Length: 515
DNA sequence: GTAGGGTTAG
Image (tube, rainbow, N blue to C red; front, top):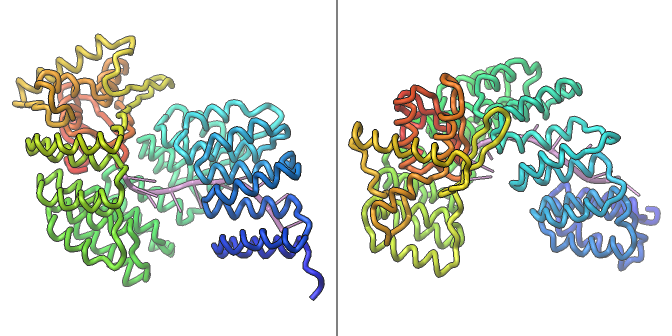
């Protein structure tokens, strides 16, 4: 064989990367230096791609330093690969600083950063950056595919429709990924019917197209529609993969279709020979828990052939809350705290379970535990889009210009709930233990989702549904509140929380009060 | 031989 050169080394690095042998790929790069092969920007970008796939910025940083020392960073491919590496490792500050210091940005630079912001939970930054693309650089279909998930996560239907119009004008509609991203966007903005219309118009549906729509029905609690679509998909000869099965299993669990869930779980294993992964087990635990079969769920977890993680245990902990099983909850929570000692959400969930059982001593002990770990409670935050503008409400926020009106609305509703439904706020969900009931009730009234719902009722036309999005799961007290508001105002309230959609209509919720 | 894209759920 002829002399090895930089091209053959690069090809090897890429081959290792494709085979997911990241460490071998990186080792190969390090050996190049020792062998005195001249390093060019092609190898650098390739090995940065390796680091991005591996998700470790430690290796990436060494390459970054090398590129800096050797003056390669002015090459836009190198700069873009660096940005992508940092974005994939979750370090958006570093990605941004490279972006800012890159003089010759091309569309890939913009797409990389927009996509990075979208994926790392900074959807507003993604949207903002999109608006800053200069005239001379033309966005392409990939830009849209990077941007649409940001719109989806914000649930801004108006913005989404604007961007959809842009996609049509620019002629990106015949692109699969863009089409799928649009369907997903409409689903996550609560516009299920629009999503379906678009879905039906997609001429060549691929597996992702079907999966997005099935998952969409699932999130909205339309289990039967999800199952119909899944059947239709199979009739068309599509072969569901593990993601499609997560979608259909969650659709079953969100709609309480327990037997159907087991049917698909068995189908996955027997007919498609897909080994269940953690997420599939989590769905099944969710299904069992929903049916109130908590002990069975516990045994099921202990019989798993793979090590359960916190999401699997977490599904059971949710069940313990709904069925008020404090003893099992403690056992389960112990497992979770071992696995994820720093995730505040689980402490809050256990605290809520204790609170509902009025076990104040335990609540106190748990609070001390949270305090000693210096964990901060995640701030609840809800938002609502009216006339294209997004209003954000934070728990206990008192700065809104309409705060008096909103406060009065919430208080009036609570008063009516007490009179008409024997509702007792009982401070069940307010995590304040040394406060008296009045203070707890006040804290409940200030929950962000109540404020956003009140704002929606006060500021939108009668007959229009009210769409609210929340960053965390909806609180139980707010869930009761929303049900009541939908009844007495005759308004439809659609609330997307971190887990699913709740559609409140005439005093009922699509989640059937299990979430 | 180089860098950017979509899907479940949390």
